[in-house]
Image 1 (cartoon, each protein chain N blue to C red):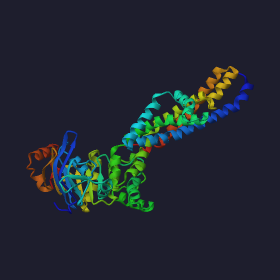
Image 2 (image 1 turned 60 degrees about the vertical axis):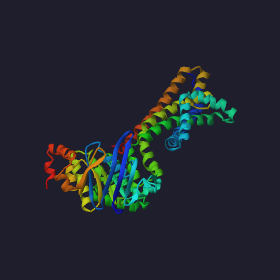
Image 3 (image 1 turned 90 degrees about the vertical axis):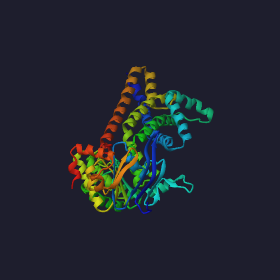
Image 4 (image 1 turned 135 degrees about the vertical axis):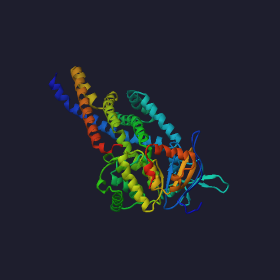
Length: 266
Length: 218
């Protein structure tokens, strides 16, 4: 739509072998908004998010991050040209990524994980990198765990370190790929709290989640994906109160069956 | 046993032990280094390099070390590689070890979770930084037990070097055995000495593993 949208996707197609996972997705993620991608397993939501970070290469279509194409740019004749690795890395700099499996580096402390990009990419002096890393660990409530290794942290703590690691690089957009799906229910809350605080600060977020309660309360723009297409999207209130699409109604019912109706109220 | 003969032979036996340990330690250090170069070349280099290195590794792993040493020492001069026994033995052990280490290390590189590399790319690390800062350290932790195993194998393979007259431990002790007809006793001394060194290596490995435990994957 507009060049100043945080992320724009046009006709994004992704195939894995003979299996078409994304079938021409158009999506706009607006600045300062929390966009939640929901949908059944295999609907392509994680793939779509990973395409936004160019961790998966989209087979067709153009994805722009803050106006700049990532991975492929449209050529004058309508075909696509692949951008050089340096350009991909440059565009990637404006996004921060949080993974389902945390993906902390096991040989570095919590502080080391957060400071790594500051040291290696931004080339900050050691002291300054550590101070800034510590500030971000404090922000996610883990200052006292700074010298712990990932193996010594709970899943929830690891995910908060991972969020701090992404935030330390000062991204414009944060991408979350099912950030609580590998956590026990009691550890999910601490991660969602950090994400809620981040949303309240006005961070642009694109979140793939199964946490319908989070999507309903924190999400502003809801995108429901089904079989590689956007089946339904809109403002959170409307989408959840009037899920007019049959697949969406069916999808929500599985949550309601589990007694989640309380989450959708209020 | 003839103690006078033993006393007489002792300096040579001790020298031999020193040579064995020196060659072994060199193999333990330079074998993995050359192996790492091979593993990186195969993993990140062009296809022709991968194919060439693969063939090299297969030849080394597919032939007995004894035969390799014969070829290097007696065949080397025909291609202008006229080495004294000790340098030939050292070179042979390093190359032999490198072939095995390259496969161990390549397995370690492949075993590093893909997500750890993706996280590094998302933070903005470039390819070289990903290799240096993420892949190599994580690989080291993963391959440690297999490397300890290979160090032990290399120690015992040094005995083969007696065949090309490297003045190492096995040569010195068997020479003493032949001179005194104490064959069994010298073989027992050899077995005990190699086993003792092997145990020490195992202990070092276990203490390193315990020390690295906090770096384990979660």
